[in-house]
Length: 287
Image 1 (cartoon, rainbow, N blue to C red):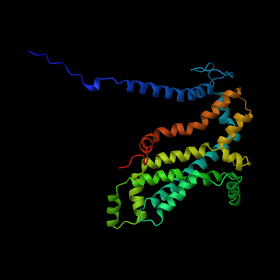
Image 2: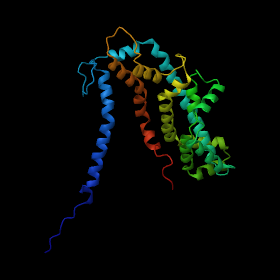
Image 3: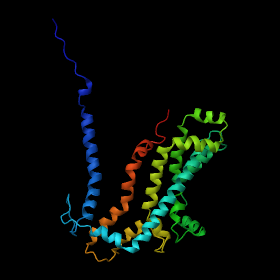
Image 4: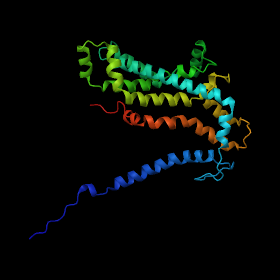
């Protein structure tokens, strides 16, 4: 009687590609996480010399106490919060409305308008014409320049258009048959189905506005109008550190300020991760 050989399930077979893939991504994760971990550890470390430790040698909170007790940092931080919130909302409004208009196939000159917008992604007028325009708009020495400058992003607009084009056309047709207006379709059908896109693109807008210090450096000289990132840059590059009653080294203070700068998004990202993972491939798959 012939012996029946057991056939191994392909699920139990380990592929070399999978092993290499896991190793590569683990290494990439370590490369990304190690610098962040070093900054976090050094922000709690009272030792002012350069070193790499997995845990603080002399734990201290004086760096964070110095940041929180320095009154001149309050206004820049508030400016960053205000410009980030308003700039994100303006960017989402412009991107969603623009993307909704561009996804209308019956729009006259639609292709020409799309090519015109794509052209601006490659070519720009340059820094000097931009500065002259901002000066004519009275936005120099004004923190609202961060809102106006980043309020319109063609890349995000194209992403929103691609996402809207992925919504089944039958939904639009059914809404039109029921007598829904174009803006009614936008508010009642398009936006409720676009939570993932809004979350991911909104996060892009927020990070861009929050981290922009070069615009402040070029256009703003009034210290009451600068943002927190600019003050952080001055502290790190020019050594303009605040003086308080706490005995803290400059390096500890630098790292504490860096953690404070990225802390809002570290707290915000877990709540948006579900939508961000869904929306990160906006427009990448076409049927």
